[in-house]
Length: 318
Image (tube, rainbow, N blue to C red; front, side, top):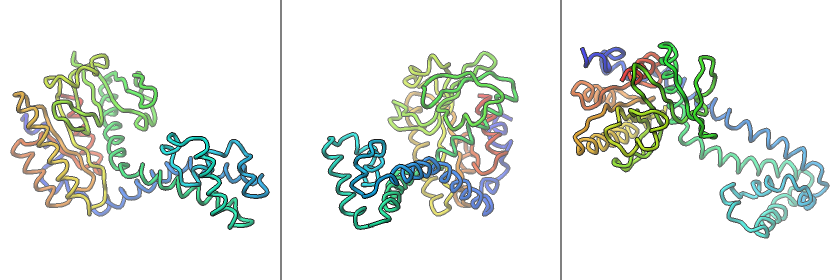
């Protein structure tokens, strides 16, 4: 019965883990929508830049509009990170290079040329942030499903805000908190539990996608160094492209093996689990085999809401 409660509540065979064509298609649409959501601030900045730059009669006049100087640096191809390492004269030189090489040759449409080049650099920045968007979406799905399980059970919880680093008491009507959450903590039947994403586990010496620890919010900072406080550790792979599915599983499998070895050396065996968006037939069979022989404790396909909800319910019950 104990084995059944781990994964057979939502899985009956390896085929249940396989991602269908429709789910792959929906995943790509979700990624596109997220990319558009993240691009919205850049589009609005470009519109504001165009309005402000239109006051200039010639490209050289742009240097006199103080509030757009950071945007001019961006259009010159200077990233936000690089800006912090430039001296004031370096910044002026970069902007003057932009004006002489690109804006002045554009003639009357120099403002449009400026906006295009601004968006080009911002697009590069967006592309970089999108590389791990699958992982971010995976975290959001698990967070929302975990909160749903806690709310149904009327279990009070707190969540850690990514920006303010403050613990906030959760409410049933909370909306979109998964956009800002980095950890979730609750107490149930006298047990304190804290779930946190993407943290380096000292004795594993690698980042782990998700850790569930036996501690409250006050004890979290010291809990990372105590192997006996780890209840479950999981790998999340949110990439939806089937072409990269096998590689994602190989990476996750290696990580989970490393985790088990690290804890085994301390005579401990916390639960390990895998959640992936793109799962092909061969992968599914291998994952199923590991479930059956007890190598991993649980698994779910991220594109299947019932499986995600069941796995998160399991985490909440540990």
